[in-house]
Image (cartoon, rainbow, N blue to C red; front, side, top):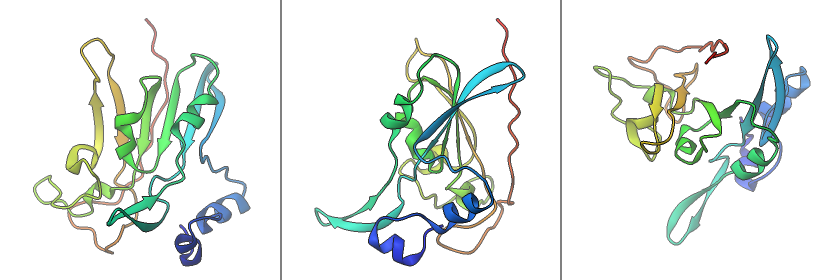
Length: 179
């Protein structure tokens, strides 16, 4: 969470980042780290927010200032070990290279309002495509499937209301695939 001053200035550490780091929780903002689980190595990468700071008027339109650096984050991964990307906003999924086995996101909160399984308004350029749940897509026939999990999360965005979209915490269990 950004303070209003940081949000409007367009830079500075966020309140949320400072709070997490003060209790020893590492924040992955355009960072990648190689980890090992049950003897299997993998990369965990975190991308900075794509809409982090107050919008500016550019060419007569609002343009959000992000702090995301996908190429810089990817450059930190120096081997072919499987990789997982954490990106708050799921819209980045269209640009995520096949290098990542899984992308984890939130931001849309499932649309916050779901009626008959659909959300009338979703804060995404892609509408309901990345609004909620498990998404599997292929770039083309020759590419393998790419996976995205979008959590409904706990909170709200913009409007303090949730209807038909229960708050949730998603637990992802890592396992190995043997061929």
